[in-house]
Length: 218
Image (cartoon, rainbow, N blue to C red; front, side, top):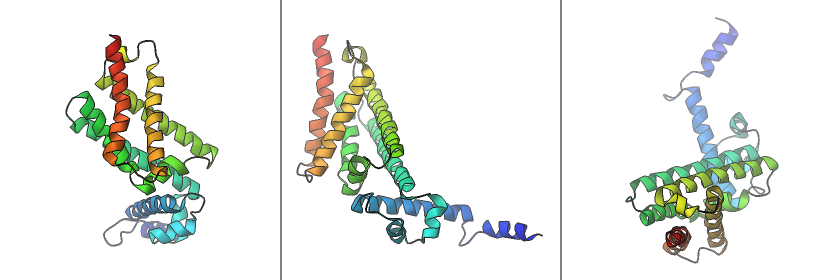
């Protein structure tokens, strides 16, 4: 056996019942979790690789095993959080009674429930802006995807032909997404003075108003 063969075998050897790939995945997950805490607490510009590694209980060597720099980690953290929110919103819609108001309320409750976490809100509502052109593109792509979820929701909840009569369905979806995000931003920046239920019901009025106006036009 050559020295290279020995090195490759040792690299894949299991420790504590886990392979090297499993340990690498665990370190990456720990860095993502640490990124949520550090970016959410300190902000992107004040966060350092060293502070993230300290939070994760890992050395910098392991950071660069998975991420080129703190911006690369931030992009992964942002996409991880938004994907989790979207998945839970979809699950809430499926679990809710098959009635327009109940389904919309369930989805909004999940979204604003996550925004009630100051760390998450700071990352997805505040820190995401102004980092780099690459992060801006990531934000736009995620927002468009969120708009597609809203479009799917409105298509299931309301008479889409009536809702979009004389208007563009995608623009309406983007409008609802924008209003939802801005309500969340105001709530976060205003120190969460309103209750979660109040915020959910306030946002819900916008969705139901769109459906109500469509009903009135028929």
